[in-house]
Length: 191
Image (cartoon, rainbow, N blue to C red; front, side, top):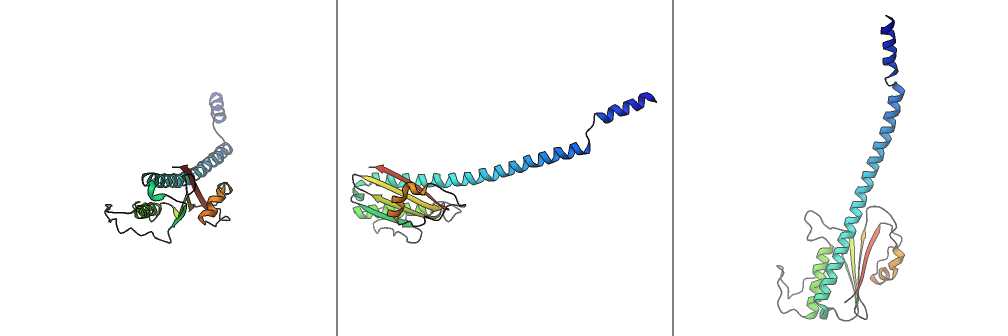
């Protein structure tokens, strides 16, 4: 009988108390809540980086269009492209992408038309636009400089260094300095 009592005491001493189990459950709960918060942050960051990647691709697309039709883009101009005003398909171009007897200004307008279609997400299936409320701006400056600015609306408010490209924003007529949801991508190059 004495040995069975000693054996029972030893078994009780090796187990967990209810308090220890509850503390472990609380620590595990905080850890899981941290993982959920980290997942939400990762998803938001992934969305933001996708938006910046699309803006970068669109800016580079227009730069390549300008390099191909360099003669059509001569002179200093500022072109503002947004969802509110649609660029018209020039008369020398067909809906299937073919064109015949296009003038320099037609080629320039054709570049802007197709760029606006890309900016508004016309080639993206299942979505009205790949960027929210996008505005594109093309500034052809002196000494063969070209600045392409793309401005769009993000999901949440944050700061993205708006003062760094204030001149481009002003030249493009984007007047939403106080809007912390506005995002921007500016590419400046020499042709």
